[in-house]
Figure 1: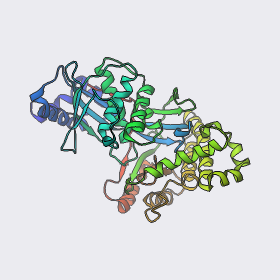
Figure 2: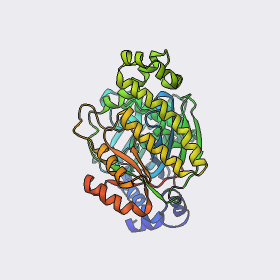
Figure 3: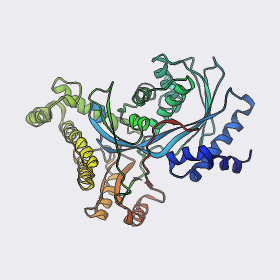
Figure 4: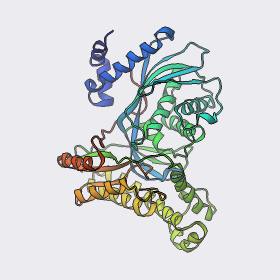
Length: 428
């Protein structure tokens, strides 16, 4: 079948309806589906697997509020976006636990034998580690494993702040569960992804990214009990309100930033430990001020400021939810601005302390604040230190703002975001 014929097939009938729900425009993504299918048949024709191939999708996410609160059992506001990790998959025969994945942009396939589920030191920091870790998470829940072949494409670019790793983890969990004939609750799927990233990949992330990807839509998440987070779905149309949501990739390398990321939860938990608690959610905010001088001595000034950020940011999230539920966009945007200010001054995650000469995030935020002159809002997005900012721009002014950002950060630096209702799904 020719590429054009495949593309046409994805633009008609039930396939078109499903793709419209996920991407808004079936024609715009039909070529991507056809390309994945064509490569699948090219790579695996000589070793055809049982059954028809299937497509699975898991979205990236954008953090709307709750910057660095989830790892201390705090509250967050997040949303799934139209950018996603997409896979064309076929199961291997029963008893074959091999996994082979060809990913766009990589010449060599990812290969994993699921007969061995212990973490492999040489795989740390790789996609193979995520495959093995997710498989372990499912196996530990009594879900039988089955090998598969796949081709993979991701529009959630690494380093974009939209959680490419979480999208991959959630996608893998959805694939393995579906091949076993099981359906996991979205929160459980997220927990398996976090387990894989923490224990196998080696990154100490919280649970927000995976939860937003697994659940979909706009979600308020309360991690007071991480084993059973409370998730509340929200509905708000920023476009209808006259604003476009976007992130700006300011560049900068994420290499050597693991210690910077890890220091934030570590310092927050050190302050919690000062009070005999495991996390800051269990520390009444007023105690931080009352015992501040002692905290400075015991934990250091930066730890105190980061703990203060947590207290303020955690309280902001329910206020943001109330504003969206009441349709009060002005109040919501004021809270977004306050969140960005707190991340810059208190959390201090706009640039790494060891490289103060590289401040792309700070520049992007300062320029956008000047451009907006009180309209809209801008804040650091995600983990920080390098990567992206998030901005709410009046739609009529988007072209001028994009031109400004591209002058500083290059063509294509601005990524407009379309929010997506479904989380991880089997598409076709």
